[in-house]
Amino acid sequence: MPNLEHQTAGGGPVAALAADGGPTTDTDMIERLSRHTTVGAAPREELAWLVTHGHMEHRAVGETVSTHATPLTAMYIVLSGRISIHLIRGAVRHKAAEWRAGDVTGLLPYSRLVAPPGDTLVEEAADLFVVPREQFPAMARECPELVAILVHVMLDRARFFTSTLLHDEKLRSLGKLAAGLAHELNNPASAITRFAKTLPAALALATSAAQQLGAAGLTPEEMSAVSRTATECFTTPLRKVRSPLEEAEREDTITDWLENHRIDRRAADSIAQSPATLNDLQRLAGELRPAVLEHALRWLAADCSVRGLAAEIEQAGTRISDLVTAVRGFAQVDVAAVPQPVDISEGLAQTLAVLRGKARGRSIGIDVSVEAGLPRVRGVAAELNQVWANLIDNALDAAPVSGSVVVEAGVRRGSVVVRVIDNGPGIPDDIRSRIFDPFFTTKDVGQGTGLGLDIVRRLVERHDGDIEVRSEPGRTEFSVSLPVAGADQGGRAA
Image 1 (cartoon, rainbow, N blue to C red):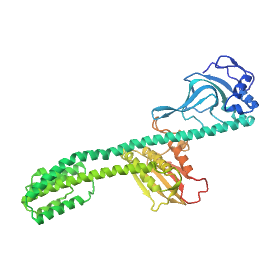
Image 2 (cartoon, one colour):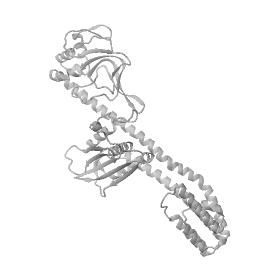
Image 3 (cartoon, rainbow, N blue to C red):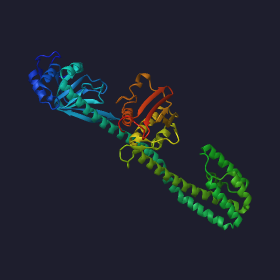
Image 4 (tube, helix red, strand yellow):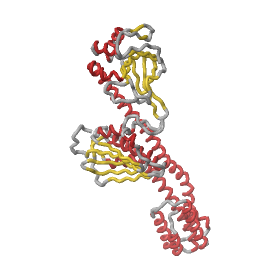
């Protein structure tokens, strides 16, 4: 603590040491406050009351004025020097705001702030005039003009932190989105590279097989049978993805069939990779001469391989295009941030496309149920997508590995209602009322900012909606209600 004699709450000309070591009387302190940019506009008698009910403190560089883990107990009028508040985002500490001579910070009259959002440190040796919280009721009675000034300071500070923290949370969401998108794009991009490298060899094999088949001298009927079988095999949809064990069993079965027909068993692997079934092979064997059957099967396998690679490249490219489209829709990069009719089902689909990678990484199933003909709501699509992203992302964090998340959207009493449900452990009763408070989080340090649900609440309220939570072990449900576009919203515009 600084080496000071504090003025007593009872008032009186009790001296304290100023920053330069000289004495500071009540009169000197009143003069100093009258020159203060913020509180100096208050009447002199109110400044005199302030002096007799507060005290001076000198803080050295590096000292901590307040911490995010400790409730605020006083208001600080900065007379000289510089103090700043530092927030922790992930594992990084960064400065969010600073106060210099002429500013007021700390706890303010009528403020609902309990603990600051970060740690407030002294960056330049500072003189602070401190007014304890206990004096606020009396200050409201005795200093109405001063309190009016401080209320304006509080409102300006609230606006600043709201916009700043919303921006920070959007950047955090963008970072998570970018990481998930990079993972999602990596899979199809790697697949395209892999298939493109394999394609030349497959084309060479198909060309060689076609030359051998042409040299075998097929009859028109045999050529027609081979072409029909190739078309049927390629256009037959794959009903399921085979496991490695199922693949091995299929290859063994085809190997046995080839050996029974005196065909080189080395063709089994390529035929097993094709969609051809044993019925296809058996029918083809009945339509072709034994001398040309092996050439036909080799060409059939090679042709299916080339077509399959081309189809895989097309699917991977389409997946990349779909992801980019989903992200552009999620971020609404080409749409002005003004209220307009918004398709909730489209926003949910875009959000789920972005978060699918995270769900797959934790083996969590996401079931989506959207009522047919869901009406539009009026709002800003990008902001509503931020709501869905935060709620679904939290549900994925809460659900156990191999758990489930359910997203439902329907109409109830003139409102569109979106529910996000997870089967996690639930929210304890003792903290349920605090989950929408700024900076409150149950996640480990560096894992959560405590801003996600606060921003969700603010965005929902900005759209004249309501958000509710119901929780018990094994089921937590967040429910968002938004007025249907065109309905009488009975309040401010979105």
